[in-house]
Image (cartoon, rainbow, N blue to C red):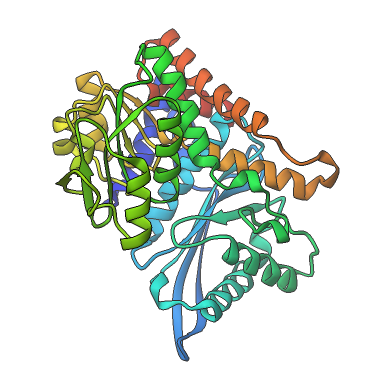
Length: 401
């Protein structure tokens, strides 16, 4: 048993599917252990001072194609966290039926310490350190916590220089000028909306019901807008500074304006609440953890009354939270289905980069692929009479094996 809650959650999700399928101990152990784990030290000048940064890249599975997953810059990132996230990506790419395995990377650095030149230096060091371990047919990186298009652009340029390749497909989430696609922007929120739509239909939940969103960043904010367009009322939202709630519904335009002006939603009109307690708001039929990993523990799960929980973030439930919500009969759409829109958008960018004649991807294809992944999960859950997480993992593992 590992001490990192995210890795525990990822392994438990995989084990639930493996046990349901009756896999052998040999196959289960093979699935639990990554195909490749690389640790490198990056010598970088940050703020004019020499630093040695730890970095990891995990390629959890390569059976279905090149590994795929983001790279995060965070002072708290660790080896176990990266392995856990790569494990989730293996399940997610397989459930979405993409020609990818699961990958993830991280650099142990505080983003607020980096100016534009420093970011370029980190990207160059990372490309040099990983070299041939990364590539369009081996492992394709993307943005994650603390990284964005400028980092992907810089990485691709540095990777081309380090390897002598002229391919731009070693990373996705790039700027449109460097081979990125507009469809990739907002793809996670768009996919999550489709997950909620399908869950509503399966559970007979009305579109006018209240929603609580923990996390009002790029995903949470866009998802809130899409759900309001669908007729939902946003009854609680939060960011890292705190939360705000109202049984009668919050004014989304005001929330966005206050967030842009002050950096937080806490000064918007409503009742103040802690950043995680928004998920336990009594007027929320749907609760969406869209920011932190391992935020829903057994205590928070006990206080949550939502009929549906949708994991817009990666691994927002720890094992205790997973088990408690399952015991309560709460429907939980796991991250492998709920936020698959992001990696599907990345796939569409990668495909355009490696097959330039394939044409600009359309939103209809992203929507259809998200729907197919969620439909496969729901149908398996109903046929086998298991929870959605077990069903999603079972479908994914069958495709990996």
